[in-house]
Length: 193
Image (tube, rainbow, N blue to C red; front, side):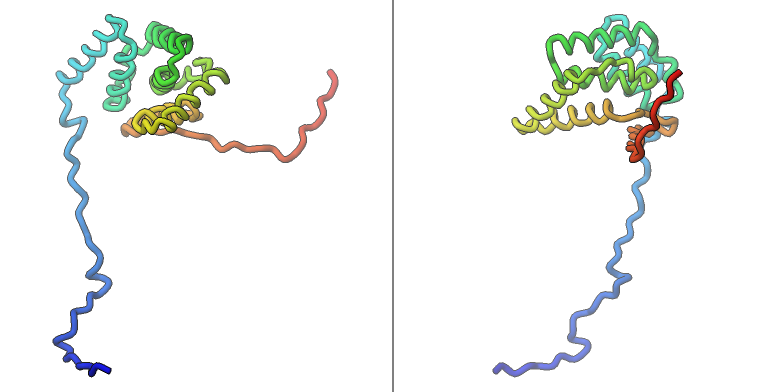
């Protein structure tokens, strides 16, 4: 048996107190402030790019830029030209993706329409075959381990499945799903009129 050697208190390793183990860091200062870092001139130039997409009937690019501007300035969404003409043109592009079929592009376009025109989301006319196609595309991305495309398709499906899509004045993006309540009581019989 090996003899044990006693250490004096000053030779023992220092024991930390629990309070010393907590690491406090200050939150990083906000590095970008939309209201301070984007000028009125910047806004006009970005709006000009959006209008070029509209005039050139590049509706995919139009949707992309319109969403960017909506996130940056939700209170100025009314200036983006999101009218019946834009809706019909983007809806026509959605129908083209359905006919091809190109389910990744279909999901992307449908989700952009749902974000830009949340009050008209029900008018997208998504059918069971559309959902089957979009979910089939998601499965193919999974099977082929194309994870970036999988993430994009999944987020598009989350947007389309949400009951509401909101971009708040505080620049928050929110998908709202209302709770589904199943009635456990049978419906009363109809009375004859």
